[in-house]
Amino acid sequence: MEPKNRPSYREIIESDGGAISNTLALTANPPQSTDDIPFTHYISDDYFAREMDEMWPKVWQVACREEHVPVVGDYFVYDIGQYSIVITRTAEDELKGYYNSCLHRGTKLKPSGSAGWSPNIQCPFHGWTWNLTGELNEVPCSWEFKHLDYEASCLPEVQVDTWSGFVFINMDPGCGPLLDYLEVLPNHFAHWGFENWYVAVHTRKELNCNWKIAMEGFMEAYHTPVVHPEMCQVVGDWNMQHDIFGDHVSRDLCPLGVSSPSLDEPLSEQELLNRSRPGNPTTSSTADATLPEGDTARMIMAADTRKRFRDDYGIDLSTHTDAEVIDSLKYNVFPNLMFSGGAAIHNLSIFSPMGNDTGRCTIDRMIFLPVPKDGPRPTPAQVVTVPEHESWSQDTAIGEFSAKVLDQDTSIMRMQYEGMQASCKGAQTLSSYQESRVRWLHETLEKYVRP
Ligand code: FES
Ligand SMILES: [Fe+2]
Image (tube, rainbow, N blue to C red; front, side, top):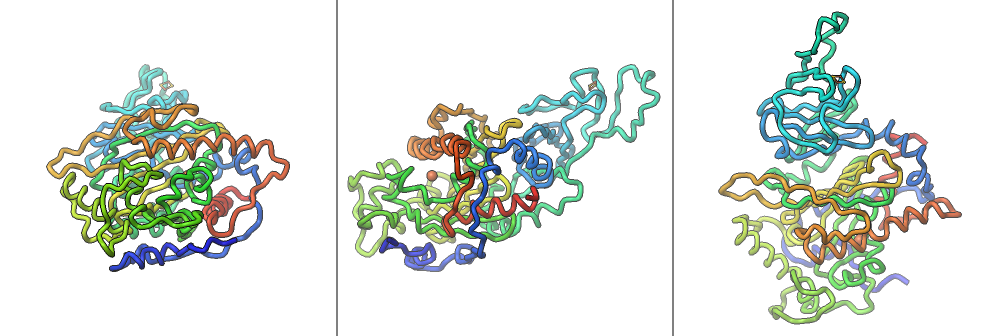
């Protein structure tokens, strides 16, 4: 039976009063097929190999932040599957990306996972050396290489571009511009940009499942009442709005400070406020502030956040609507990125295969904070790696509540991967709306990996 109380996201933000942001007023959820999606997309080594050959080398993907390579000579190694790219700052306003493989006998020029500074790029095996802009200018025992065409031995490059402080790469020499690939994203983030924010927390969670299982676990809230029952007190999970703007960008808009439609009785505004305040347990009804007559929990939550930003960072959020200040607005960019939109929350999660393994992946979750007004820009946080069976709380910077919710999400992922392998049915049957973005991911994937 359909729940009685299931207002749409639009109805919730209308009841906030005041203007609705043009960006949040949009809806886009085109009709999709309802066919089952085969589990081979997740568990087949052959399908994974085809993703590696036909999809990953053709898509724009985030390699690092500009602040990872601020000085000429700085480098950062980005790996995806077997591919490895060295991002190098070659001039104050120029970045290049080179295939991380020596043109002599193939050795990686920089170790995977490394970053640092060097005046040139020297192979650690026999010492062939390229300058920062990729020209070969030193070959030991050069008299033995009279047959070598130096001009043709520049380091092969990938496409590099930036948006909002993120460094993107694309291995396809014929790819279109990054800004076209990002569809509505630059426009929607015009007032929510990441330029003046820095990576304050960077957690890498290792998981035993296919990378798409990890990503899809954060693309619907259908699972909330079962996986995160306590969240139903403060999140409109089944009210979430799902939008699909094109092949590369989709989003969900999730209202906070409202009760889940799955509850038999919605909470009062006072209870919602008590349970939504930072530090309060979501299941406690301890009153610590009395809601003024006529106010809603969402109004007070927005006022709290605006005050915090003013006091802590000197940032004025008064031009943003309450929804932009408090709600969870998640934008997915195909294939593996999830940006938090809005004025206050700035996160990025990257879901990547781990090495060349169909059944292992990592989630790189970065929390951004505003760059202090009186500078300088802080250096990006070091990565804290959390092995599969350990809790996200190993990275103490995450916060207890977020770590618990993330543990609930990721603890189900190995079970889903193993269940797919154990399946007799061999395919998934998705809901038509709440899981429409899971289907979107596969529909776009199939445009690269042809069935
Ligand atoms: S493999 Fe790089 S110099 Fe020999
Ligand atoms: Fe979840």
